[in-house]
Image (cartoon, rainbow, N blue to C red):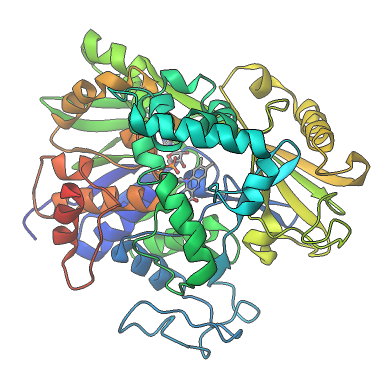
Length: 538
Ligand SMILES: Cc1cc2nc3c(=O)[nH]c(=O)nc-3n(C[C@H](O)[C@H](O)[C@H](O)COP(=O)(O)OP(=O)(O)OC[C@H]3O[C@@H](n4cnc5c(N)ncnc54)[C@H](O)[C@@H]3O)c2cc1C
């Protein structure tokens, strides 16, 4: 080991913080001390248990193009054995999920297990279901009607002949790839619900990050492949992120995996403590010296010194906690960072008003989630937890839903009491014809702060802030809000890995952490560091 350091304070027990703690224990003798402000581990990927019915905030697919991440997850929770004759091709040389393996663990016999789930998500618009992403199939065109189909074709041709240049906003991004008409029909309302601002003021880089290589040509190709080609590779390399059709999922939701990792960190000599909020970050001479931590149960504070500090707390909060205060110009950027917050209303009901197949079949629709594109309701997305994992629902004869609302802390939605929110959500779902409100059996309301770091506000000056924070040699920013990036778990984990590798090898520059990019293909024969370099170049 190149250094003699013994302790690393890790702020936040979400996927990034817990991965950092676990990896430090595997790769060094540095003790990870994880401080978590809330009463639960898992961060945004926690599972909330309400009377035996479990809620996954947002619905977390476990899917990554990184072999390192896929192997990490399935080393923690092995993949279920398949008894339906289906073969899962992947993970060469590994005992789990080898081709045709039917002898592994099953979810009925074992709790710590990854299920293999089929994905279906659709768009609900004009009280009808459309494929997501839009497949431009005959069904879609028929539902859109002749006039809309013609308008879609013409506006797509126009977007190809004279694309918007320079491509500045998310509206430009969507229009250039799908044409204005398709963008307005299927992307605008939902995206604006998520961000609370028009797509014209959101930076185009958001599209590049999330919609990635998707365009009309790929939608047509995908519709074709869906009919003629069947993929059995859980990793599905070469498939664009929005098109992934299968994914791994812990039996009891994403939080189950992170709770298990927490146990391992505690067993292996690290510590993960709940109710510990980092409120002050004391710096001197381009180093972080200590953090002041408040115990949210007792109100007592303590100062913890450390050799290294790995932070997954929101960048804005981190900057505001720094003592002495950072210079005014970087504080201005930090204070101008914007987040969107999130409310999930869990609803237990007898049955939906919409069915799979024939309208009267009574069969539960197979969607994991549905994008609500209807502009006359605030509801953004609907989760059907039964379809994520049947084990999330305590009575499988009931339907356990998550109604997702995007909002901003302190706005009208955020400030509604739980009772008001429940009535509001039930009315909306009844209004668009998905449930009959008389059939609601139970409900719960969950608020999640800073679910989405926004790519507007002062984000265009983020690099200045980054360079300021990178100048603290023993401070490593990781994860979603920790780096103000709209990232999934895999990306958050890879940034944690990069930070740990830097610490272990005595590297104090942070460029490789910022360069982590999950679009890169990771290969098992390469070392993790080589993976990182490849990732940065992709
Ligand atoms: C709606 C939605 C859907 C998503 N779907 C997917 C998906 O399908 N697949 C996927 O892989 N990812 C998905 N994600 C992304 C995933 O949730 C995040 O990438 C991941 O949780 C980020 O991990 P993190 O550790 O960086 O941050 P977080 O999960 O935000 O964890 C940070 C932790 O730090 C704690 N903390 C904050 N401030 C302090 C402080 N001052 N002191 C101590 N602790 C503090 C927080 O309480 C939290 O527990 C989704 C996210 C959302 C919101």
